[in-house]
Length: 115
Image (tube, rainbow, N blue to C red; front, side, top):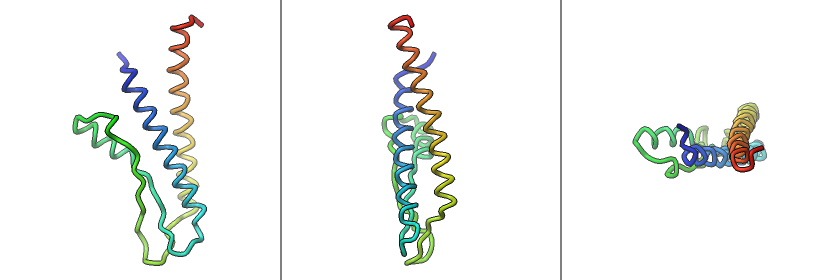
């Protein structure tokens, strides 16, 4: 049996994380030539994995944006190739998640209205 409340909560959290990740990547790309800029990254999947492994709930997990402090002081650590690849991956995951949510609501629509 499918737990629709948990499934919907997971989809919502995933879409929130993907939105934050896309914004962080775009900010990183915009600052790729700024001296001393340190890239932002969004952590979600590993936090979700830890929470669920410990018996926790999806509702307790939110995406966290952190600064990648790698590289020397005054050195920009943004790689345009890596950020573009991350944006492409994020786009694919977003399309998957929105189709999944859309399918769920189409099923509800059929159950309610019979079409």
